[in-house]
Length: 277
Image (cartoon, rainbow, N blue to C red; front, side, top):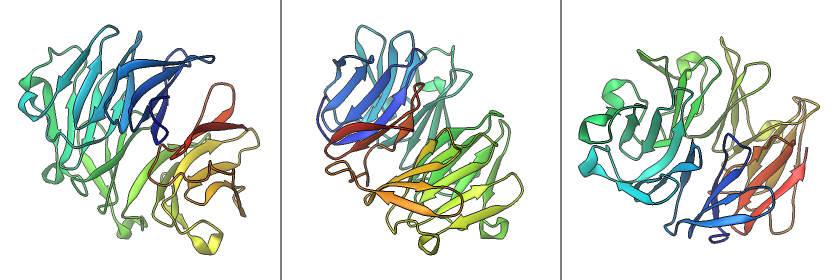
């Protein structure tokens, strides 16, 4: 492992897990942690297929399977302060930064003209982007650090506000469940959007006061969330929080995810672990 402070865990098309941490990037093939991709502190990863991957840190990095390439504002990025990277179903690369979003369209030659920029002027709630998510319909959701969430349908942006029932302003995690509901994790609360209305869950429902991350659904349909308090299990009625020794500090590290074998992986300041769901 390239460091213990894990910032992101993302599966690729083969089921391997790419893990970013304070000292670089590694790939876990189910048996071995394979390093050597990058030694820079990395906040986000987007596997690119066929052993390639995009990394976000102070600038954007692309590993083509053999060597590492670097891109920054001089190459067309809106900012070097990268928080989140997403590769959508079309192969386009979305880059979330402190100053907006940059998108590279698949098949375009990499250069200054390859990057499309989106900011508050285009419909983002705030330029400080914390997370990016693509739903099953291909909509792109952007969570921000103070401006709530925006949705892009490929043509226009829509900003969800308290008038729509969206009360979270700091959104750091987005997830879609089996029923198609969109969940949002934020500071001290969680919101669920059913396509029409929002419902907000807070500390009064049993959620921790800390920043909440999404994990996934288990076989029984229950939801898992991570925070500095540990892992929380939500059965739609009650919340139960479990502590796993050193693996409780999920605050400001890589949010958890469910792999193809049903294991819930969680990144912490003290490494990475998993539990059977």
